[in-house]
Image 1 (cartoon, helix red, strand yellow):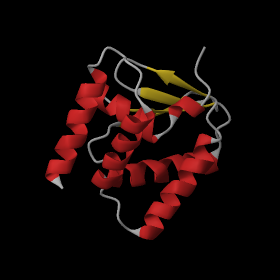
Image 2 (cartoon, rainbow, N blue to C red):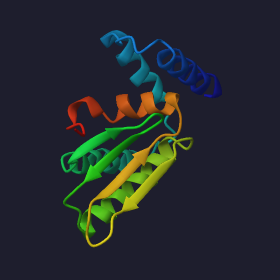
Image 3 (spheres, rainbow, N blue to C red):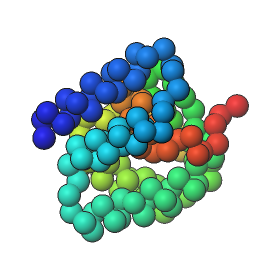
Image 4 (spheres, rainbow, N blue to C red):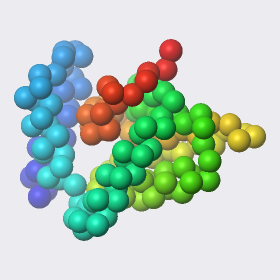
Length: 140
């Protein structure tokens, strides 16, 4: 398992250092498979719930913002259910990817909530692929 995790990070390092060259579908698919294999979340019910949360939450993303070393998901229409779902999502993601850093920010007066994930070029690339950010609205 350690060898697989090292392989994943080696691939991510290579990808991040490749001068922003477009990634082939084959390379992307292989990287996703390796990341899936490296995931430490093994309970089927937890995986099912994490996938449900992913589908529910990502439909509510207003936009995503690309930072130098991370991505931020912004939720303009946040409510108590979303806060609970985001907390549960982070809990499962921490089990799956214990090296990933999360920042959950609440703006004042019922303002937007944002979830920032990543802290390096390698984790940023992983977040982009796994969270399928290419399918979400980008900040303007």
